[in-house]
Length: 180
Image (cartoon, rainbow, N blue to C red; front, side, top):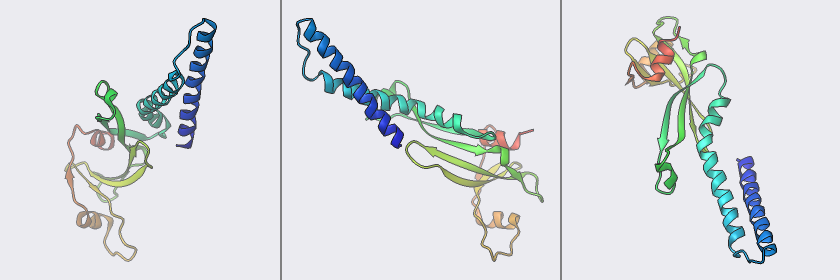
């Protein structure tokens, strides 16, 4: 975030410098440029860079994902205070699954434990362990059992999780249950 702030300031100074050159060239031509030209160009630099970063954030994050981590859901957003997002909606949140490290249960090969990563612009990444039942199909948040628990993992999963249906065309189901 610090680098983005520095880059935003640099974009403002760069555009203000361009306006300064235009101001000096207009003096050489015998005309006067308006006094508000430099602040206007600085504002254009700030807004232009921020809009560029908002539209490229998703691609930058996806390119940094390690092998085996797959994007399973994106959320496009339009906001009234970002009128340009009505023309082209922005992806400000997405979910990625660590399908490369998904582990099947020994007792039931239809049940997988997989980590989901929730990405959101300007927020830190959250990791949520999920249990995927390919036979049902359903998914549930995995709650780590207490150290003194005498339950097996399968018993623990059945007792402490709330199962939600999972569609067979859901990318999470496809990437976990249909992997070869």
